[in-house]
Length: 339
Length: 282
Image (cartoon, rainbow over all chains, first blue to last red; front, side):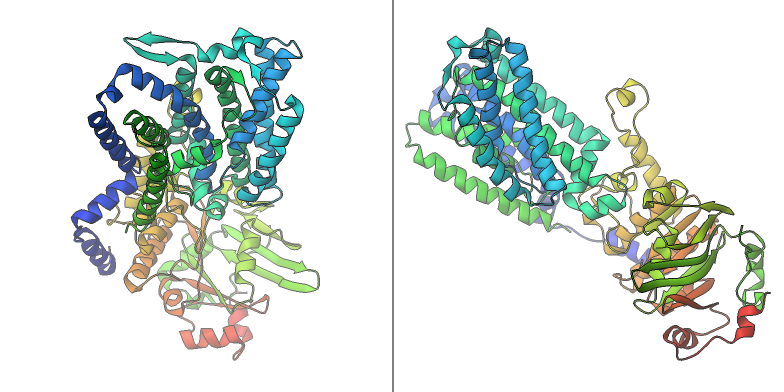
């Protein structure tokens, strides 16, 4: 070894880190630490404000309320990891939901078949986003802004804009709203399905080659391509898988709302993006963990639920979420400067 | 197979290295030509690379050095000429084809993914899965095995400063990042490694480290093509120097036959190579 490189070695190992730099490094490696700390602190605070917060009944309700946004946020995480953004989350979900319900009610189709067609349509909608992003080279923001309007319009035109009550639907489409209790903690099958989705997608992202490629394409698409990663194919697959997940979420949403209604989830886009960002995933792509998104979704719901239990005006929740988003993005900017 | 002949006198090769040139070239281009409309990028260039040598390619901007290398490695499809690998005619349609044949390229800047760790970068797009159903059914990566082998690859290049293969590449210095890129090429390039301006963005110490790695690769018997603008680095590391000028080859020299000033003069057209030097080995 030459002297030049041994000098470099000495310089490298001799570098001292301050306490702050160590925190920065830890957050860089585990971006979900800060949302987890926020979650634990808010749990403690809301329990002090109202002891009813920390009961099994409250927790069951909280989990059920956050499950749909948490499911949508999985697809949103995949898209944001590739440095994209999906504004058509809510539109695809509502489209799938209205198609399933209308086919089952007006078409008299069996629940399972209606579900398959609905989820298939959501998957195709995601594929369309992906084709526009990868083949037409349009920015994801513009593509999904356009398809947001298109899918919303199709959903309204197809369903006539009216709600379909659960009582008119086959039991199969409502099944995810059913559930069971464990010692006062009531969970639905929908919640279990969302947890299963997190486990599967989390595994794929962290343990498979495809997961690595998603991160690589999000971080440096050209370097990934030169390394032999099929960048365009990976992007196309990400949007398609996201569409599939929105379709599954649509099924859970029918069970949760007890009806298929066009305005079932008006804030889906911003809520899912908020969960992803608070969960520590970078909007610039290539950085973040799916577990962070789940924590982010729980945080948003904890604030909504905790503040209402504490008898505080709901506007404070908006204020708190707004602050959390800005703090989360600031932390992301800070840890990206790690050296 | 094209007739391989050294386009310079063997006297200019140090005695202990002459045996390298007794073997067939590992990579050859004959009459390499590329044309875009009326613009001629390469005008029938011959190039030979031997096992265990560093062949530098120098030339002004637009002289065709990157174009020549891209034609050899499948990034461009030449409009004329033939490429031989180990004496066999080959046609690379994409960079992947060349890579599968054992030719690795380290690109100037876009070499690594900053957000991924070192082991993931080394094995990007060549990931290895675990044995048994965990790998075949669940497609699970063999993270531990890849990290261990990545560590060995980096050690083999004599890099002591990188210890933890789980470190994100963005936490590394510029030289260490380049080291990761070179280690990647060395681990998978079984025949040829091409380095495009590997020292361009580096300081003095880090350049020294990369040049050491290049020599290390040469010792392991690979053929190395080094594209560089940095003449001191070229004269330090190269065995032979291929000079591109205006889309053609202005000559092949060695650090022993010509000094840097003469090399630059040939490169810019201020001086011409005398023909007996070119035909010395004929």
